Length: 193
Image 1 (cartoon, rainbow, N blue to C red):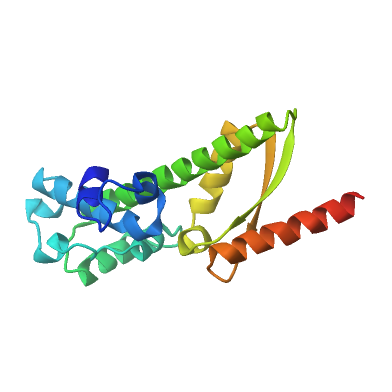
Image 2: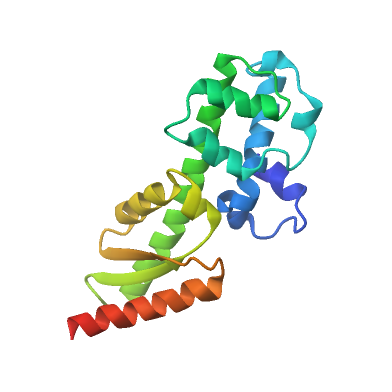
């Protein structure tokens, strides 16, 4: 599924890791899985709708909505119907599971990358333990009901000798995230002195 998303992207063959974790691509990964499952007869009575064939139709915001803990299967079915997908209750269960698997994998991959970086910083500094602050931004991190929690858990599991504090940048820019991190680090250091 990742390969299909990469092949049809504007920068095929590049930034593959980003395509597995970025909100820009997760909906498209889900759409490709749904097409495959439909072809195999697992979903939508084996009938691929024209809507499902449309690249970009399954936006990442739908993952967040479908995975919301407050959302009942009837509401999942409503979202699918709004997308022109005639679904059953079983379809809704499968789609919710697919969205969960794709989001969880993205959060774990993101956390694994973060864990590798902070643990390498710890090793390079010759420290037994590292306290570090990381600035984060992005709609997926902010709005997805489980992404940030899974990412944090993954970092803790894979970099147990690092305590990572995540600071949320509200301006939606990487520069803002970096600035927030720098200010947060200075405040933390001032408190320790």
